[in-house]
Amino acid sequence: VFAATVNRHEAARAEVISSLWHVRLAGGEPRRLTGDEGDYSTPEFTPDGKALLAKQQPATDRWVYMADRLVRWSWPSLADRKVLTADFDESVGQYEIAPDGRRVFFLAERAGRDQLFEVKVAGGAVQAIGKLEAGTYSRIAVGGAAAKPVMAAVWASAVNPPELGRVDLGTGRWGAIS
Image (cartoon, rainbow, N blue to C red; front, side, top):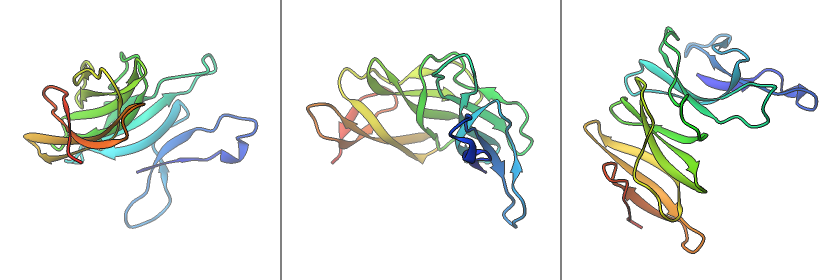
């Protein structure tokens, strides 16, 4: 599954929309999975392969800016489409699926800082992981055992250079490891 556009040549006069496409490993023609309801990017499968997630910026003629949302489908049926961040005010940035496939961690800008959040793949309320009082996160990575995931992130501020650290997912505390 990948994101691609079919009308990039119209960019000077029309909105260019990226859709999700599927091509079999054996080859053949790609099959379009999504329509023009939004601009899709960064498709990822859960570790068990039973769900597909992607970011979507809803298409609209009414607003200049729309927040990126995190969307989930059952795979391979594409049934049960759910916008996981529908009630979340911020735009979803980078996201990473937990090793157990039950949660998604993501960055979103809040109060001028890229902060860390999580939402369940099955749906539910978005939860902040800790509260950044200074600086901002970037380049999150999640790994480890399904029962005890480990997160690394780069933290930086206007007066501190970027530094790699580990984020305690229980408290949201970041500690330098570089």
